Length: 218
Image (cartoon, rainbow, N blue to C red; front, side):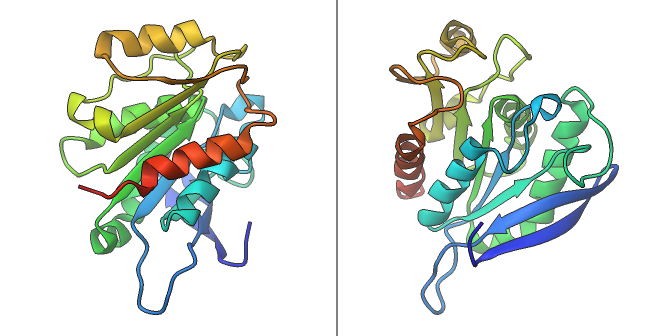
């Protein structure tokens, strides 16, 4: 966290959701580029909003001028509820996005991002929201393809999407991610020699995400 981090308790579908909002450093009168909502890894395997990859993604957005929102899914930390195999977690994510809709309206931009299980949930949020609102950036890291039924991404969002995967990911094999991406002709950026948790490569992850989200918005 940093001095501009805010702790919130948002109302989710089954109770309170523990949330952190990281604000970018702004000049007087300047507004954030938009709001980025980031989903964390699997709740039953230690995944939380404090995961190092999730924190790194939040830092990349924040340093690029975005308001970065992280939250704990139901049953994680002090968020209420229990694990629901992705169904309830999708509703949690949609509730968080909805809470920040007024800020999105003011800033004009929305980014959705996730790591591992969080990328799976994020893919379904993108699918659910695409027809009803603009999504300006998507970032999926270590997407849990093969383990879960990851949603296909709309063709018109491919250019706005960054999919990152480690070559040596032993949690979600690269082959599974490519099998998901191939039928969509969706590009995947493969990081040679990198594992699922990007050990020793978090600065590279931060820089790649920052580069993607700093591209001028259409």
